Length: 447
Image 1 (cartoon, rainbow, N blue to C red):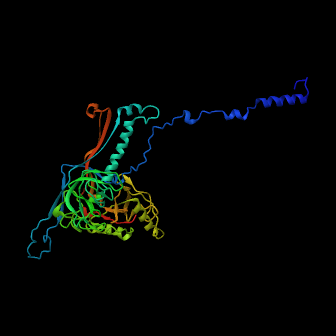
Image 2: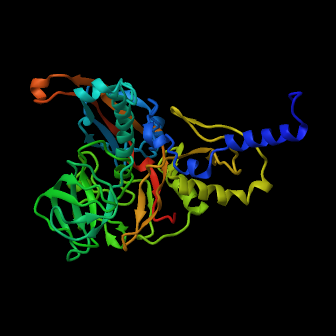
Image 3: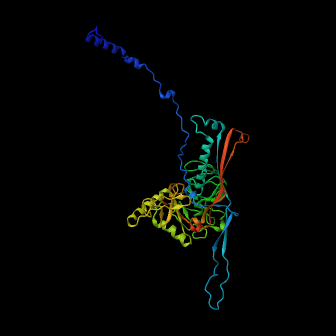
């Protein structure tokens, strides 16, 4: 405080100076601030997180073998009547008879996955905000998609119900069980006979109930059963584990005298009747009516193949039936000992669990492998049921590879007539089954 003024004068001067330094309210009301929207543009990291289910458990679980020098194999289906019997001291020898041999063949099936990017897109992908390398990102995605397609093909259903009647490009099915190039037939509601002529699929919509475009001239009828006659791609496990004449969603699977779901070259006289050499060991169905999974059903899929001389070593189903089996076995947990183990099936490993615990890895010593791509059963009202439960003897199942998965690309702008880069993955092979009656399944299970 200056010496020549009083304390009161000093305080008054200080207050005047403070008031003069405070801006009026009207000053703040007129201000404009630079905000995020004025100067900031969102950019994204180069990492791409895949939000799709890319698991391929069943494909990984099956053994892969080289195709070999032939496209076919033989099954012995009869021992020869009377060729083996007791012979007395001076009795005649048994009458000579021969075994019965049936030939099966299937050519390699090609599956392709292609992709492409523009040259301009590739050039700018390395700039700020780009993915780094569009071609590499798409290549990685296509590689996953290719194996996923293989897994989905070997798990497609062999039959489903027609949900919308109509000719080609109008008729629709309740479930996606087909691929372009597949040949189908129908059975059931259309006069009780269906159509036993081949219809070839040329296009499939992406709707929940896929609309089919096909050649062959048939008009689909609502409520009929559409079943596969010949696959363009890999044969599915559901094509293999099947029998003719059973009821699917309230309708007979095949016209009398004409086989149902096709597999390999088996046609006509080689109809797959229940108990026949080339039938599924057992198909436990309920005519399209939902029922809960029960241990008696699971036990039957084990017992019948064993009567046929098989030794099932894998249960395959969806996560719904996997959880149902866990719930069934929980009640027994308190009465049985606890043991933790992990069962390995091919390249896949089941969840760690117990024989009857909360995470079931096996049942009666047979591993349980859940796969999200397992086919669902269907009702006569076009509604999805739960996933199918398969009981398989994988000793008689294999993926025969004629051409291992290969990658090629093309940068010929003249050929494409555009500045684009293209790539392709392809695989040639087939799912082979050497004994149909060693396999079994339970269908019409509730979700």
